[in-house]
Image (cartoon, rainbow, N blue to C red; front, top):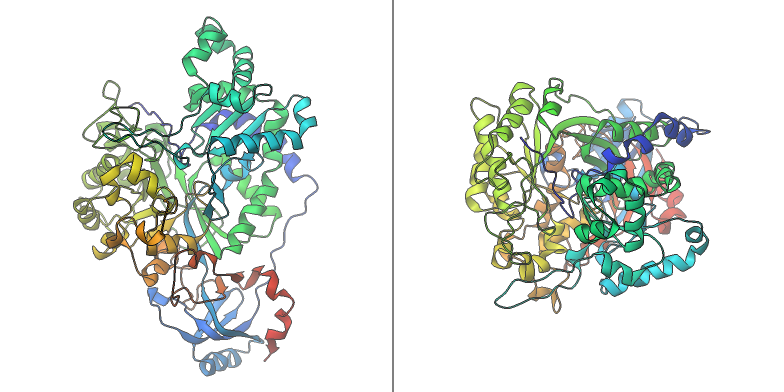
Length: 636
């Protein structure tokens, strides 16, 4: 079986960068430097308190009912119900507690969940120049090559000495699919492309290397190409001269083969800086998550090297979110080396709940594996399938090796799976291998998932229900990229994108995710995009730009998808996703009830998060209420 690991722009689920940089980023010497002089963290003790007033929705068993009060002790929920009954429980058990009174309309919910993110890769790249379209959780209105040029020019002026001394300009999150595209009636539509010519027009004198949002593709200007070629004996053997190398790549470097020489040519100091800055950037990520109400994150592409770095960070910093993970598995050898699965019975930091397979690329990157060709250039492009057999690069049925891989992981080793599948044919292959290798006599409550599951038909939904395989939707596909899908990439087929309501109607328990850093952290924003399905990049009235209105879901369904059901998908429902007695006291307090808004578009995502608590410890407090916090607490 040949594993291609396609150039899936806007899919962070698997990328070759960390294999390329393993020696420089993850060696013991670097880790020692990062942790030098830092004291190990002693976690603060959770408060004992009774919270009442406002609106309290514990979502016990996913139910939206409210309670008068909730009791917290030693980091866990000990009672919910009437204020009288919770007070009596606390007193009868000898618990000394404070009372926290919520104001009218303030709403307490279980901590929000991000069920599919990429934590360490995002942290390692945060020091690169951000050239993405996102401004917070909204799209920049002027995102185009001219804007990109302005950002690079301004950055160079601000850091002139650095570049005079030989540093490269390193940029990240370049997103051609979110730039203006050209619609050609009767012909193929065209997305923006980058090559060495367009990058030379941005900056010709300093090596410029830009990384796509997926970390699968790099764009280099001529100056960078010269440095790459001159530093690589392999390239010099492969190409007769620099001009031949430039003509062959045109500054578009794909996957490990194209990216490895580029990464190795970057000044060593800049690579080391990535690792040295990782702890600071991890702190920024977790603080941002807390500010958006997140108390639990599930990393959907963990490796042993990434986990080592994250484990080290957690020894020296307050643990502001809970973390689970899916271990990436790329080859049959990886599967053969897996230990037998042990069910998750109690929480521990960075526990493994799934094995992750990446079967194709992304639809906006034109590499999601499709049954029909994309409606934009290049012609006759059906995407790529990662596990194609040698001699059959475009299979129409799941290759035997793919079935064998899934069988080893799920049947022989017993692991629950997360299969990344974006294109409709990749989704069908995932369903087929689940059916052929797992279904006979298997437990359909195992929580095997299909990640992104972007283009999905009614028949596929019915089969997923039969197999007990729920989807996790990257709902930003609708909100952020929906307009590009409808007008340029898929046209009519875009109506099948992220069918949340159809999946729920069939009885599937869905979750919503960001695939961070593909789209911004923010469960409230993800709820909003599933409720409204507004294509945010479309011109004109938002009410006239709704993608498949029939697939809009209710606020209650959306809330369940980022709390109770997300926890279930992540094997965390015994301690998170609701505020049931015995669960962790992980909760968020919002200024308004997200289930009671008059308008949702560009409103729900902006509800102020007043406080976020993990294990009875406040990990985020909105600056506007800090001064008055003491006035809201009384001693019982």
